[in-house]
Image (cartoon, rainbow over all chains, first blue to last red; front, top):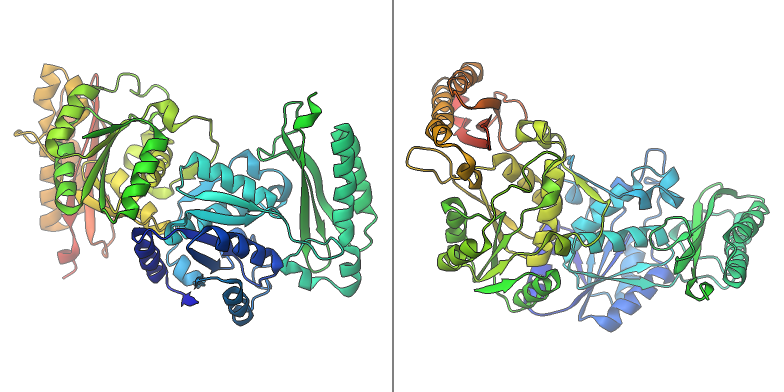
Length: 285
Length: 285
């Protein structure tokens, strides 16, 4: 596995690969890898000649008071996991490499960014679109792999890629979970033992709500079930619980084909998110 | 010369060329070609295997009340000129092809867009960055060619390409002029005969101001000369006349290495812009 930490080197290598007719699969991450990331690599490995993974904790997508400084990092362990999973090139630039000068050109996502996580993280998705644009330009992938767990990020990136004609195919990969249902996340290590016991209740509440939505099509009742379930978590405060059309993230209508049932819960040392997608097309008959 | 009018076809062709190790030179235009555009093709022809020209009058960069509908168009004549100049692929999509759905993801240029033309054309450079991003992604050029005449556009695109790591080299091509000094522009056809006689005074005023700036380094005196010269044009109203640092478009300082002396003049049926770049580095000693 090749290590690259300079932007110019990454650009040169991807340019060379593009002209050699090698298909590139790209897995962007913020590191502290878990099985969710490795599932992305596995998919990329199947479909491409070369797999590039980036590890970059992107300051532009953290707000003031958010956990940029305390976000977990372990490059040595990550590199070993990435190599074992079949990554060919690990790109881990410094913030100074990625942002060598102050830039006041911004990419502003639209209304898709005003709901769910975006409602309490103003500017977060601006930062995501900035870094994704830079990383796509530096790695020139044919396909890029994103986890369904960050469903809003995935929806916004899919829209961005479509509206701006990026020559890259976005591949959705299902959320990887612990045995007890908790979605894998780099932030799970910051839960206290008691919180770790309670955290699977997020998925449990989403599952119950999803079942109600699937069976009855009644989003209000389904959402109440989710909220009631989350309210029972002693150590976690519900940040949001919503049911929306996916991937537009607009209110659900009779024409909606897919819905997202999503929640965020704040624990003492970590804010966890999770979601379930529900196919709605069979509700029209 | 190959004609392409579908976005999907353009993406497929550029993808194939990229994998064949063909270098692509890209010349984006709004059509109604003149020698200024052909000078861009000439440069592109020298440096690349394949030259792609786009002709697209981009609705996103015209404001309400601007001349989108009346902007001159003549695809047949343009195609003949492009082919003769050595263009390999002419990409001329419809607005519906380029904007098949409403998109509310915006790219917002920063302070560089608040001066010169940007001051009186709010949102104009948002539209420019949107279409340039789409065109770069669709044509995948190694080099893209821009005229120095649209100096603010060039400065903003250079900054954008740098800050967002586009894998494309931006090439500046000097302004092509009529014998009497008037900068070539597709909008010149909309001048009345009397205005056409007066229009070279724009360049004349910029030249006198530039000479003063070059000889004395005194931007205030230089700017007064420009403004006085423009005020003498009977049929034209000065929209702006400015001297700024280039390409930052910030106020000139003792450290500035290059200055732009720029003006816009509104005639009855056309608003004309022009500029001169002045090297300032020899002023520090």
